[in-house]
Amino acid sequence: MGNQDLELVAVTKRYGATVAVDAINYRFKSDSYTCLLGPSGCGKSSTLRMIAGHESVSDGSIVLAGRDVSHLPPAQRGTAMMFQNYALFPHLSVLDNVAFSLKMKGTETAKRHVQAREMLELVDLTNLAGRLPDQLSGGQQQRVALARALITRPQVLLLDEPLSALDPFLRIRMRGELRKLQKELGISFIHVTHGQDEALALADDIIVMNNSVIEQAGPARDVFNAPQTQFVAQFMGGHNVVALPAGHFAIRTDAVSVTEPKQGGIEGNVTSVEYQGTHVSLSARITGDQEVLALIPDATFFADPHYPGDRIGLHWDANDQHKLTA
Amino acid sequence: MKKLRKNPAISNLLMVSPLAAVLFVFLVLPIVLIVIVSFWRATEFSIIPAFEFDNYAFLFGSPVTYTVFFNTFKYAAITWACTLSIGFTVAYYLAFHIRSQTWQIALFLLCTIPFWTSNIIRMISWIPFLGRNGIANSTLMSWGVIDEPIEWLLFSDFAVILAFVHLYTLFMVVPIFNTMMRIDKPLIEAARDAGANGAQILWNVIIPLTKPGIMIGTIFVVTLVMGDFITVRFMSGSQSANVGRLISNDIALLQYPSASATAIVLLLTVLLTIGILLRFVDIRKEL
Image: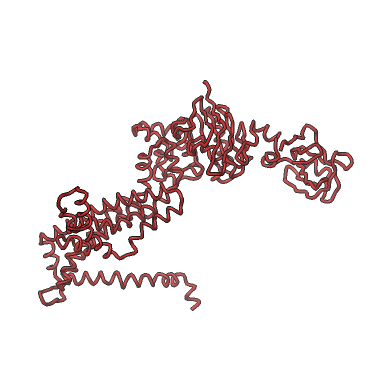
């Protein structure tokens, strides 16, 4: 297969005096699903658009399959982009939207329609080929956008918040389909999102960005389980960030258990109890005015319930305590 | 009274009635009057109410009518082609090459500055420029481009069309610019992502999506040019005629029935032209 990797080398984006992306380095694994995750304005979209070629690179380079593509036009990079609101051509039928890039290459009508139909078959939309984009639902429009991007046979598919325009139910269904499609096609998907649940559900690797730099990158499970910085711990959710004499630590909320006072390492007062169905979320105030959240299986909690104001002990395994660098 | 206001049928009727009344009094009634008068009989010294087709028979029997209508269409077609190419270029530049919205608005307003003066003044100001010893000729002579003044600059079809283009290009710029501003910028990126070059984006994305604006501009320009008479009179030095001038001449001679008949034929011609144009493009999205 050779070296199909996409690599960012000190890629920087400046808009006047502001730095949107600050010299980031990353090597995307081939055939993998990678999520660029971060709050809005963190530089994730600029990064994606630079990879796509819709934004010029201020400094550094983007290397795809051993070729510096930093200054090539979008269509010659081997990437294809799926836009946030799909950017389907409103005056063209579904079939012509999908066949658009072939038309630009000068492929004759009959031939490009055959290929476009094959693509529509892949996304299961053959019966809607004659419709205009306006006549499709959000999910269908997304499949058309997907087919239009994939017909260029890209090595890397770039997705800019592809699920944000869909309702929650459809979002969950479409993310399953995206994941399946990536496995079937065996190409790299790079997906920009600000939803950590979406990133966890989809990605092999997650890149968390904040303030124009990569905060932490790695396999999804590592990023969630062992956050290295306070930002990552808080952004990924499900973690307590606790300041202890030895420094700041992240502890997963479901790793915290409640004991009788004097038994556990740390004591605190229960401030609130929230029933969440499978779990009960209990928050307690410990020394130093810090809030610690414990996610307790409902059966365990109701066997020995606690109420706001109770004095309790909090316990967790030393292995579950991850030291934060910042 | 309260009961009256609550009844939706009556309140709807009340709401549409002012506009309906204005349209009826100032649009429908005059046209009906013109239609009626066009069937009256006229002699050199009198106008007699009647119902006869003499005016129309004379109009369609005279070769002058056909020349004049041909002239009118010629002016409309050439003006349309010129205003479209200039208008599209200007709108394209404003919409896609000027990045900041402030500059877009500033330059757009700049386009409208000539419209702060009256049509007639803008038209007449061409005369000293284009005249036999005008600025254009004397400049060209001083540069040595020509040896003697160009005669066809003023009082010619060239001058008429130049004035039309000058007067009406903005009517093309505004609707086209408006439609172009509504084109989603990601569409251009999506086209580029699919490998389209500048010309391909223009032809496959921008022009198809700008069609409604082009059509609205076309309707403006075509109707304005076809109904005009003063520009043709001034700029051609009374040497050319269009239908508007035919009507104005009849009115000057108090031949109202004949003028009415010509007006009705012109009205139907323009309506037919617009009807044909609307067959090509659906402008409802723009309204």
